[in-house]
Image (cartoon, rainbow, N blue to C red; front, top):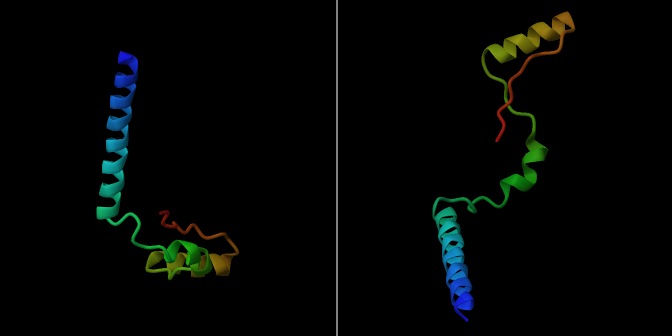
Amino acid sequence: MSVIYLLISISIVVAAVFLYAFLRAVKTGQYDDDYTPSVRMLFDDELIKGSAKEELQKSKNENIKPRIKTKTI
């Protein structure tokens, strides 16, 4: 019978940890943006700034693939 009390107390502690993690994620804004991830693939082409744009121009002239660093999320 004492094993049941031990298992119940451990399960309550685990549930409290998961509840704390969930509430912290909600407070820090983890679930705020529901729209952008679904349409991010539609707007894959981002503006190229600075030297990357110049490198793209050179590569078009020289028929070399550009080395553009992309930002991963």
